[in-house]
Length: 261
Image (tube, rainbow, N blue to C red; front, side, top):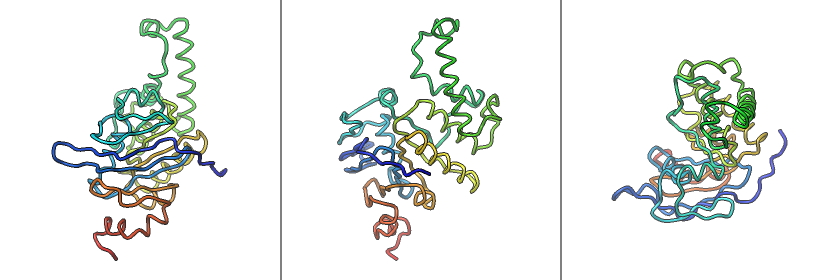
């Protein structure tokens, strides 16, 4: 694999604090993400990892702090604005349309890029027809890339779990994101499915040049594929750096093992 060139900071998270009533989900969290890198967010259950992703993609509004994306700073964005700017997300609990085919599920990821009005789309005439053909070509390339050609017309609900996760990744890729947020992409997978997903994540990063931020529980996976790792525990940041440095951080060891040994 060609050596990736990791660029300047594309996403800068500064002093984010998030509370639900009296409960602190995140306390003064800061970290950055560089262009083309794979950046992992790890931590024990309840550490605030998904809450952090939800702040980045506009689902939650933090009470304090800001997020800067490509030089533009926001204290609040909604999910649509985030998507339009080029940040896509997959979900821990699959939010796929189970009765729809693989092709149609991935096609929903193109919605933001469809320019023609609904009336023209419904009639599939003129510009709308040309546009749909172009979008379908993009989707077919993603289907080839993810090696799911054999299931193009299969309702997603009939696929094994590992393949459903691949479709979810495909739908996010269909948005052509600059930054891809992956929420536990390996959760519930067997060893072989995890190996496949690792390969696809590395290929997305390498071939599409997509910057990736991922939450993952499997420490082996994180250490293998991440450029840098940020560690949360009880909503606070306790570690940040290259995988090897984080692995040997006493605070991180304590958080994961409940002991300083």
